[in-house]
Image (tube, rainbow, N blue to C red; front, side, top):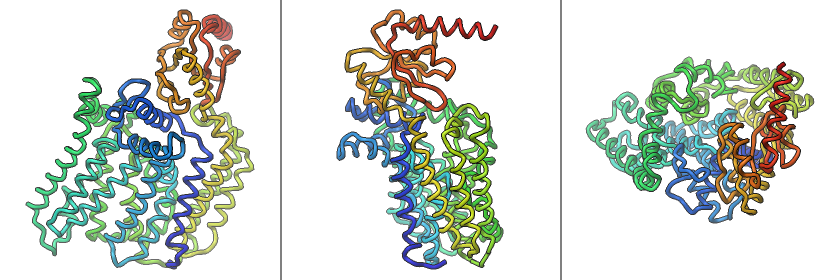
Length: 539
């Protein structure tokens, strides 16, 4: 692969273009992004930085580090969307830099590794998608990389700087996303006798003693926040952040419960499109278990097993394992590079299939979830992956096709962001509804919300000044409306129901449903009309 300046640094403008386009063309997505931004807004509004809150209640699902960093951006630039939504992507950029640096530490004589690693990471579409979202996976990836760098630096030194980095990474990782950081960072430390080069003497007594001290130091760093927060947030919040969340996720998750084998089916998606490149798998068949490779495997194998055992599973929980996977792939494909004219044919064919799907899918009777978006995608947009796929069919060496493939895929994603901008705002931009609720609260009107999960979605979009009152059922909405005729109600309705309630108030798309905020007066009569019509249709 040619080591020219454009290839070495070309991924940086690609990353900038991807993130800036995503922030310009896409509103915060429900339910995660809108919720996390709302937590940050309540922290800012109430000047309550110790205990995160959502809708006026302590929020125990996530620690405060990401919210603190958003506050720092607002303290400098004022309250805005862009600095808040850039916080997590900044960790994605730092993670790419750190993975590149890590490649140089693992294989210092193979400079081409540091060139190819950023393209392999960015070219993984799952990474590129989640790296633009306000979520916790990129911060936890960054701190995991810091911990691994600390371990690798200490493999033969029997000193302390690497252990200090390891301890700080564990503490910051817990503050970023909780004890899950231990899944990624503890196994390689415990498996050190397997991956450290035996030809160089290592004092295992010192190693495991230093590991215990660093581990304890990281825990104490996190407890410096958790103990005061538990006291300030009350008993229920304290139990949740100190015991309940970890035990609940490990044994019987309160959300996202999946079978043990669930992640196995999503491994091809995690590595797409590289999982469909034959030349990569051919090189991996000759994998030699050198010390750096063993180190990466000591992260990957136990991490994957532990994540599979944990009850709660989401595909993005695997993202911190992607950098060590990419490092192993990069090492193997740069060891022996031979021209392979067909090296990019399978990714190209997948893009061509995707182009065909875009032509067909808008005409299929799909329902539910985000399928509504397909109706806003004209079939002619299938020309974008078609051109991308054809550009990859050109004959080229195996390794040089990786920057080219990444560039084509990222440019395709950027184009789709621009093309889908209107439909994304139609479906997910809830600022108009938020402003309506904000105006009602300024007029000293109370606003109730049904279903209750809406209470965590709207605070930042509307810069709300007061909590919403959660209502659990439609019948409860009717009873509350009868007793609070001068107040307002926020409702989420399906397309068949909302015409009965939307004669007054503000209406907006919300995924494949509708959000409606309206005065409470008249809701009982509209409900009776809707109920009678529904019964007559059933008869």
